[in-house]
Image (cartoon, rainbow, N blue to C red; front, side):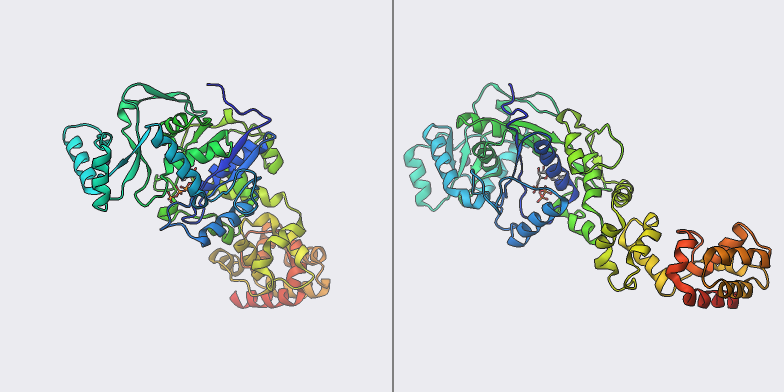
Length: 474
Ligand SMILES: Nc1ncnc2c1ncn2[C@@H]1O[C@H](COP(=O)(O)OP(=O)(O)OP(=O)(O)O)[C@@H](O)[C@H]1O
Ligand SMILES: [Zn+2]
């Protein structure tokens, strides 16, 4: 089957349910669909699948839009600004579904099923007992008008089932997995409208894609087994069938797919820890997609380098170290002022006014997250906590070293080069033996940014206090 999209008319979508905060798995699926559209002259649609009324909330809906925007994704059609194919919330599309349910019923492709949950469970148990895969037997297929009226009169509220042809196969082409064939006899008639009148996922999702003219569906592999049913529905309604690509799921440390339901780490959590959207984009774009470029890419370059042929089938594991790597890369792509803007919510009153940019310039190579910057702000402008290694280094300095350090700093008027040069002469210490104790006393650590750039931030007053404290340690 030739795809009905081209680089000129590609239309992809992200269709989440507003039932929780977006996690990295959702975000990657959204990102790939967005990249597919942006790598061409395509169009990207956001549709909210809010038919699970118990779990869908306005709060999650709001958060979902906010998080996608934060991640840097934009959409051409969606619930917040419309488009030519709305509404974009499924609960607002009930009358459209009603029309298509009626068409299927009229054509004899769907029928009401009055079986209770208990009856269905019993049926499945018998099938399992006989070693057969459980599926609906089709027993309500042949109810006549009288039998239906009787059940309605008894107050039974039916589901609507799609009637799957008894013979034949359905072919599911997939951009990632290749072509798959499903025997229709194995599918069983499936529910397309629940007994409360709401549309089942299979139905609303497929009909909406067709009506919204979505021609490329990139979604998680969890939907792979739904696809044959969705193709059947579309064929029965004579609606266009999109190209499908099922992306391997993103797994957590426990090997299970990340899921809203099970509280996977959310985009919001990462945002609150200070991860940059550009870091998350670079991390996720490479998770299951090969880029020739190995370095940091901005949004345009990510889109330009994206190709459906480069999606891999291997499941991705969430790797916090890789995310930190891209956080480092994303940070280094920013200038000092932009880094300060990013840090402001965490460091607002921790860095003296006027020293913000100098502070960023000094410590930017030594941080990944705002927590690291906060630690350096404390080491520069408050009281540094010394670690065990630093205490040992301080204590190991030779006799008279600390008083010489204090005197020479005073004489040098805070000039770092002059200070260390004269201290070297006076103490006889050089190289590591000179700089390590100074670093340990001034910052409380034996590693970190250049002392020469830290000293002006620490200032002569605080430096003297710290040298004095070091003297008392020995
Ligand atoms: N772990 C995952 N990795 C990659 N994509 C995922 C993952 N989980 C869900 N998706 C995809 O995200 C999109 C939105 O799915 P949905 O809103 O149902 O999220 P969910 O996390 O599966 O939620 P729930 O836990 O409520 O089922 C779908 O395309 C789905 O396939
Ligand atoms: Zn039935």
